[in-house]
Amino acid sequence: MAPSKKKHAGKQVCLIPGGFTVLSLQFDSGTTTRHSLYVKEHRVRAERSSGRPLDRTLFVLNIPPYCPEGVVTELFSQFGSIQSVDLLDHPGCVQDSGPKLSKIFTPAAKQGFKVGYVVFKNGSSISAVKSHPHDVPLVVCTEERQVKTGVQKWIQQYTESFIQPEKLQEIVDSFMQDYDKRKEQEEEKQRKAAEEQQEDEEGWVKVTRGHKGTKARPHSEAANQRTLQREKKKKKRKELMNFYTWQHRNTQKEHIAELRKKFEEDKQRIALLRAQRKFRPY
Image (cartoon, rainbow, N blue to C red; front, side):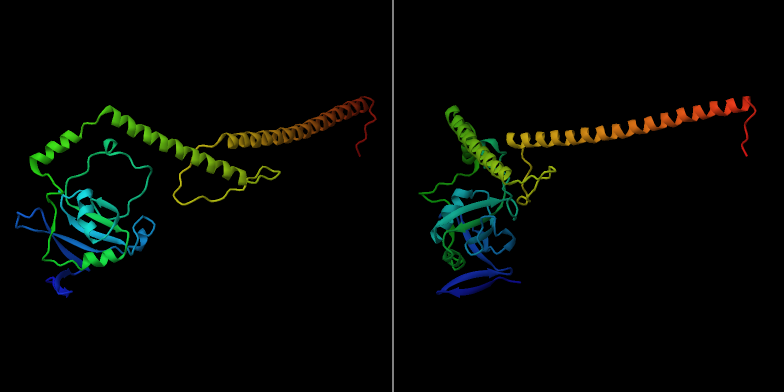
């Protein structure tokens, strides 16, 4: 199906099947070739809690390799204030598995076309992007915004791969401060959760269900002490039960010994009566 063009405020807007609007991208003012971006409003309800509001997020396809996050941010800033830009290899929800590491400690990103999620601060910016005329391209490289390609880009990447020891130490210290802060928060949560636990006389503990997806964390010192106390109580009850069991077995042994003794006495009495020929069993 051929793309359709609609007039908006006297200008041509190109739409294609799937609800996408086509935006033209031009590397600089001296080139004649254009690249096409496909954008539409992001409306995936399953990602409601992933930092992508349904009424302020723009889904962008076919982002070229020479447009990193900074360039994409500046290109779409003309339509309104931007809250965040996220570029991925494939569409989908990003799982937050922990603190965000510096690019120094993360593997190099794949070089290729990307998909993007542009979150604006105002929902009206989405309409402004979709109303942008197709015949007015977005210029990537300008005098104010220089974008390097080819050998110059490789040289820049090689130069940026080196980092000063002072800068590295600053990044490590910042990460460790955040790590210590998170550990303190986790210990505080564990302490509050431990205080809310209720233990009855028999050692049962009331356990509440945590949030979905949370991982098990090491026990605190207070929790370890309570566990040791419960183990001592169980051991004490077990010893008491063992004592009663031993006493019962000992009583049974004494009763059996007494029966055997009586049996031997009866045997001796019967033998004596036989010897005296006074035995009359019937």
